[in-house]
Length: 110
Image (tube, rainbow, N blue to C red):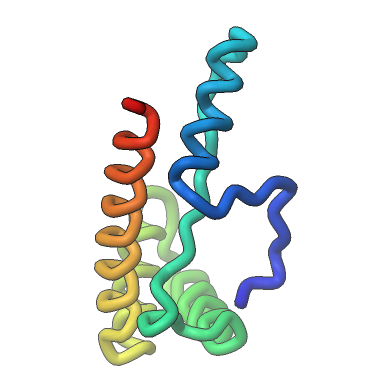
């Protein structure tokens, strides 16, 4: 439910693999950023998550958290604010990304 739009959308592992094969055939270097959505049942709506992120950022600023400490602090604060839902969502996203990566690898092999 993010309001961010993608400049290109490929909806299957086969389409992603075909796109990469075309890039290879053209001799294009570099990588592809693949944004894989979280499974719907684990989604925390954008408007709700934005509130948690804002609160966590405000807390980090108020507490003088800086540098390398920011990310772990924010993750911990968001975990607290979401009552654990963010961790469940992140685990589901990692698992979903691994599934997609495996499917793309299989499609690239063909």
